Image 1 (cartoon, rainbow over the protein chains, first blue to last red):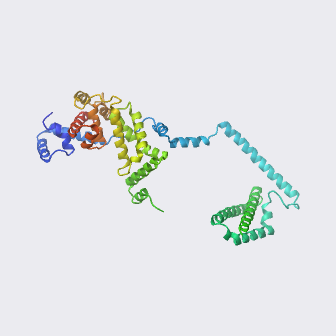
Image 2: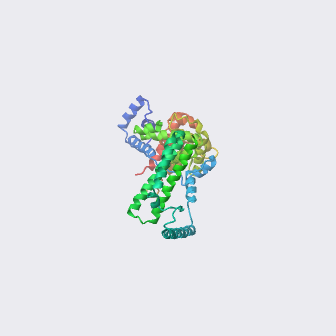
Image 3: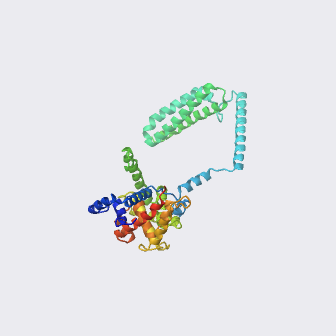
Length: 220
Length: 191
């Protein structure tokens, strides 16, 4: 099959024939089965070409490109981050032993402290970590907090907004921690850890208020 | 809060436009030296660029040339104005890199007008169960001129006038090469 129209079939398919040629070719189709078949095959070639899938290279080209242009790969960053937090099995084993020793030691110290506190109930004037109940039921603590809060309120106008914002944020965090500890203690009043934690938070609140009030006073 | 163009496109529910806008933003970031933005662009386009190179010039140098395309893109990012889609800009750049590399790697195995033998070779291999030539492989066996015109026109979607300008030929030659390529390839359509 090769008549004068065969070489024009692609142009017909692409709509590039002049109207008169187009009309003539369409008239030719009526009597030429070969041209009709070839046209259909060419149409399928075009459709097949448009449907070809793009495939990435077998090996990632980015590392070489990144090196060439002097940038760091996202994968390299992730790998570095992963390596930063990767431990070997011996390291993990050593860490778990250390953790067990610390936990055991901490529990022993707590139990010792409770024993000592029980033995010397009369001498609780200035423990390193006061028992929470001592704070909670201590009127002096409540009075001190109230005094410092008033002083802070009076002097807050002298502090810049950012400082006030930081103080309030931290006080909010401490108050939440105190409420959480109190709530947990209500269900487990004898829990030594919770008692200690509550005492720490209450002391932190007092210290923060004291520092803030001092700061506000110093600006006057 | 000021919405970015990409944000507006997203709100309009036009994911294609949003993707294009995001690429334009990445191109701007990359032009200012943001390697992560450039890597995102690379990841989005590497398959298409690599396939274009492989089809135009063969698999042997595809990695090397595709890599070169992205290195050139990095150095020319400041010339991307965002008038067209980033992909359009990148693929035109890729074509230029490929065509510039043709002569240096000796891929011009035949000229545009003496390819009949090669075309016959491609056309002669009918896709039979015993000898099945993959459509991609058949494209790779076309002579350079016919293959490049076929890839640029039927796969990449360029017009004959554009192809003629890129390849330094006249549009009539581009049309003729395309027809020869199609005629050869019709034997390799999957049944």
